[in-house]
Image 1 (cartoon, rainbow, N blue to C red):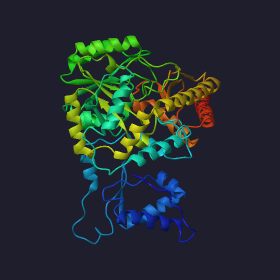
Image 2 (cartoon, rainbow, N blue to C red):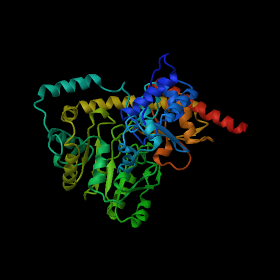
Image 3 (cartoon, one colour):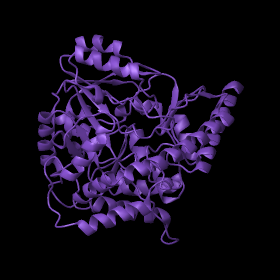
Image 4 (cartoon, rainbow, N blue to C red):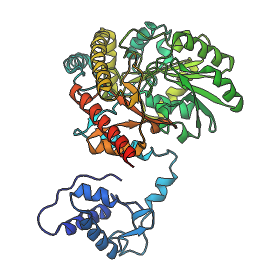
Length: 486
């Protein structure tokens, strides 16, 4: 349950002000009957008071019959001011929350999502480019061009704005993919692409094979549609194809999801040889592939190998791209390239879902791509990421060489840290948060053994990257000292 920051005045007593605020939340339906209220610790932090003040306020609310504590579960809203007067209580929204098809995110993922908007934190978690890199002047120029040519805005074609699909057809050709505009669907980011695939192409009970660890484990896109995830091991060249056949024989219906370029969270770049081997195995097993290639353009050494889709001669691969990681997540522009019948199916579902991505965003994206500004801009992005990665690696070598190991990625946003300390994931996350550092622990990506952290160097400032890594090292070293002194 979300809580705002509340400021209390000197009068009346603080506990009474807290009672009034919580009563207001209950009365107006923000905290409905059946909902769990925030913990005493959270409320104390939110109101800026001692827990004893919170306890006094909660005791009064319990006496009024509005809330009730349940042993080992927390405190819940059991009435509101209307139900105390009425004979027929309102619906218990909590039962509806539990019965929805879409599974909630992990608790720690929900906390990270909230904290990523906190400007006071050093954001070593964000998979997003810094605002310092955002091309504000060029974006204004592009939008000016778009508005000068703009007519009446209506619904777009089901597959998306045709000039954008034409621009994308030309763009993917530069990386070896032959995809006509009719075989491209515009979506509102890569995540929507996965959602459309999950409900439009896969059966309930299907299996999604993927790298383990993987970003996909931090979401519930496929699980909410009745599918299960089965992890496959990786090495430094990427996913190991020899494990596919064994899993394939155990699954009636399956699909492979892979991030070959600068994998999230490990940063691994799949080699040329591994890509050929993977595609061959999948063709032999008749296993369709979702290729998530949203980090492709973020190389810092040399361009990555051609996409799997560039080698696809039998329509095995659905190719997912996006401008969210390279240009702006706020545009909400991504795309799927694949066989025309599949694109037709997915475009029909998209129309049923949102009737098409935003017209202005699509025109802005088309202008970026068709004008050549996008290619020019990518050069500066790579330069900035190279600088940021260098600063992060130097800080790791200075402060964490004796407590962690890592590989230097060839691009992308992330460094995958393996930390050598007797420290739980939760303890590291909480202690870092106390020092105003937000981290993404490896457990949210289904990293089941060891202590891992996905470190992003894309968003925080250079000074924050150094300071955040220094503070992390202090936390780890202090925990080692505490362990040795026991």
